[in-house]
Amino acid sequence: MDARKALAIARKDLRVEFRSRATIQFLLLFSFLTLLMFNFASPPFSPALREVGPGLLWFVFIFAGMLGLSRAFIKEKELGTLEGLMLAPVGGVEIVLGKVVYNLCLILLVELFSVPLFIALFDYRVAGSMLDMILVLTLGLLGFVVVGSFVSAVIMGARGRELVLQVVAMPLLLPVVIPTILALRRVMADGAPLARIGEVRLVLAYIIIMSTLSFLLSDSVLEE
Image (cartoon, rainbow, N blue to C red):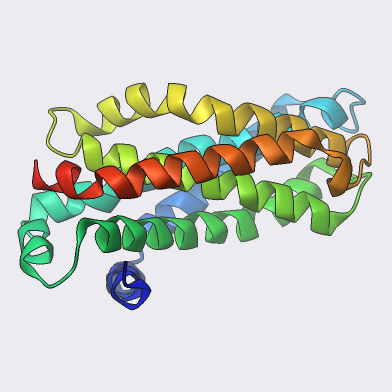
């Protein structure tokens, strides 16, 4: 695996994205409107918000991320540029890794926008360390991107790809989403330190398993 080739693919995608800014603007607008609607729907300063806040925050990332992840490989297929990538001196591992880095950059941009907005709109007081909260959230988003990017590669030739992605990816994302929400709640509501949160180790183990599986199957998936 050549990390430089993977980073070159990610830079290419990011350069194209920042020129049009269509996906980025859509993801940020979707995140803003979703949090705004939740803000009007929930009672101000509700005690229950401390418990459900991590789930509301992850709701934004799941649906915004799904909309972004669906474009990673699908746009290459639609534009006919995937064949060019396959003919270039890069392997399937570099292509998948490049897409993971690209998707991670997009979702981290959504995180950078959504977390301060969530805290401001809901006047949420994080009981634990803000750094621990960001680390848990970022680790969960990394798992989300690894799984979502691989599934996007698997189903890019299917009809109704955007819908199929959500149907196939959601069960595979549960081992990331559920432990991450539980870990976030322990940090945000209970103030638990990161070292005492066992769910973080579950998420990390699942990321390692899915990353290994994605890289081992990347060549056969892309050739199909």
